[in-house]
Length: 77
Image (cartoon, helix red, strand yellow):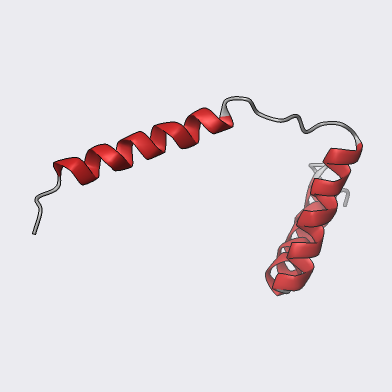
């Protein structure tokens, strides 16, 4: 008797693939994950996808100001 939903076998196979990939990700060592991250970063640089962020320094300046304000408002012991 044919399956009523012709896509159920297809979905079941992809669920099995997803479970296998999830297990692989869980078993990956820190070294492997680090290598994969570096490879992705290198690819992004090679493709010219990363641009320097001019606002990044502004963020550091804001954090420094907040830190100074917190220190100046904290009670001196």
